[in-house]
Image 1 (cartoon, rainbow, N blue to C red):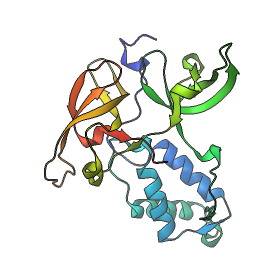
Image 2: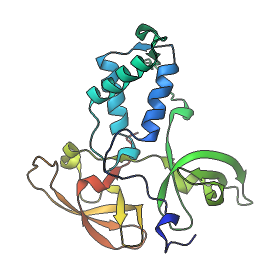
Image 3: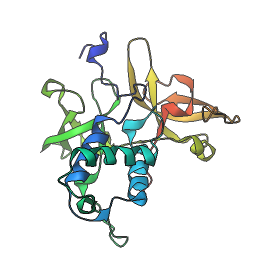
Amino acid sequence: MNFKFMDRLRPRNRAVFSGFTNAEIEKMEKLLREPKGESLDREFYQKLAGSFNRSSGRAGKPIIKWTEIESWFQTRLQDSPLVPNNELMVPICKEEEIMRDPSELEFEARSSKDGAWYDVDAFLAHRFLSTGEAEVRVRFVGFGAEEDEWINIKTSVRQRSIPLENTECSNLKIGDPVLCFQERRDQAIYYDAHIIDIQRRMHDIRGCRCLISIRYDHDNSEERVWLRRLCRRPRS
């Protein structure tokens, strides 16, 4: 892969917010078609907004309000008058259920070509090496078959990291592992890093203004970044 050209990079979508992402729209369209579970009410919209805002795909974008989701559904309902509102339901999980359906999880994988982490679109196949280690063939989000890679499951596949919200800066500590969006002249991708210093500041209308110093794991370089460029690992 030639990293001299920006069209060959694999940055996650961090464009200025102009609506829902394709993944969010696909999720809402799917919920419209599922006639089971919970009614479309305020609680449903709030839960969905929380799910979207915790997604890595919303890193660097403004938080979605539940009212924006409500407006989207109402517009779609007007476009689909043959489907009664009280028949549009979504599935809910019972509190006693501990195991999650793996198909509902979202993953990220570390490319062997640059050591950066990218969203996984699909797992295509698996194999076992002579060493006994397992690998999966990964299709990355937004890329075709020519960019598929065999990835070590144990070391380079994990559940997707979650963008840190403005209120979470107080939970950060020196030494914490994070996933940082690295922006350079010739690349813009995610790398693992650790926090080495935190300059805590008062928040303003723009949100968190703390400055966080990180050290990248892959090359030990250091950088001072805003909170919006960081993601945390999902809590177990």
